[in-house]
Length: 219
Image 1 (tube, helix red, strand yellow):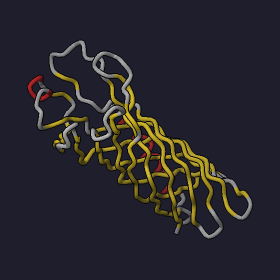
Image 2 (cartoon, rainbow, N blue to C red):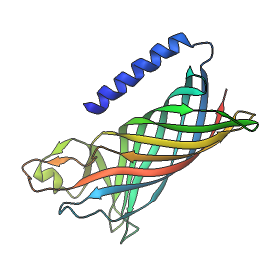
Image 3 (cartoon, rainbow, N blue to C red):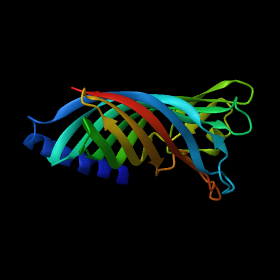
Image 4 (cartoon, rainbow, N blue to C red):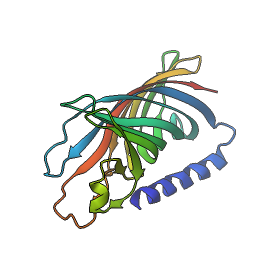
């Protein structure tokens, strides 16, 4: 609920500012590679031990000017995330999201182009995924906030929460020809594993974290 309220508030601000600055709002596309992980705690409150999984992202954004060199940058991305088990690389989580980042961007002139410095929240909506177990079997993934003990024991299905949210950081450079390159970092703040009904001693909290590299172009 907090994530939805935050998204609504920032989106409303973006629309209001956009109405005042339609003539100078620009649009762009970007795509790149993700290096993602699932961090947090397991059932016994021990740290999760996973390795980085490579994925990708692709999408579009708008830049709405709010002051000299400052912009609001809402966007929409398709992004793949997940993790690889540290002890057995055949075990993998694969997660796919539609992600809505809303960054506050500082974009001063630097040389022939512009420096890019940004920070802001994101909300992501899970649309698919799978889990590959130790014997190579690909298990279906379903989205649920809470599951029963029998669902948790099902060896053919795994579960995750549909909604994720957290914070973004970015740094990059936009060249004079409107091409850009940037480094993105992301910290998930919501746990994505479901609660298990009746299990009060479960300490597990899985969170998406990672970074990525993007190439973009402004129109």
